Image (cartoon, rainbow, N blue to C red; front, side):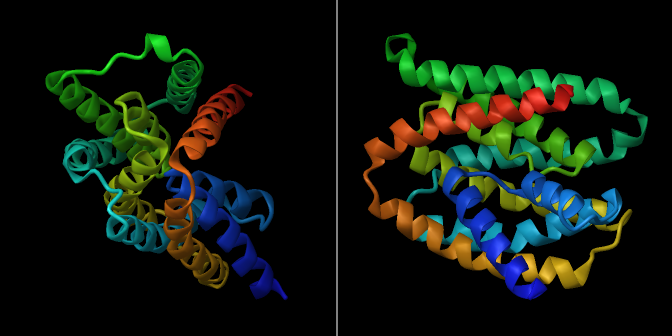
Length: 249
């Protein structure tokens, strides 16, 4: 019965996070600690272990549908990977409270900006090539630091950055999944060294997540992209705001 529950839970999370371009590590972390009552160190390692295979499957499925913007994704990835390593090395020396407040403020501001772009289109401006390169590097570094310091997949800044750079929801979700494969792998390697994986729970969630991740890109690719933008972008912005506000309390 537990395995069925784990697979269903993993399927739902895997489908949602790949559709919305997130890594899902934060969601898995919440489920593992709040529902399955795993210790924090074990939950962090298990969440990354669970998220990584489904991210690989989802990113590959997105790539096959032609939705991955590899050029901007590679810029973000090249900035995020060293930032992840630096963040992992610096994490013991950074006060948790300071880091939490900074990330919370950033997430809220990004979420508000995404919502504003959706409902105030006259304020949108297309960035030039140089500005986009700087944005890609900046959001990649921020995502990498989130992975290295906190053990999250860093999907919030990557997705927000891609949307603010002008990508539509489908291409932003696909490219975000592509970038998060690299950052999640680095985070997994570092956090497995400090906390062991609960294999029995991790494998059940992972199986469901892989199935959901494989199906999600094919489903969203068949839907109307204009409708997806109208529905998912405000939802993503609101999710970032909620995530940021929750970090204050």
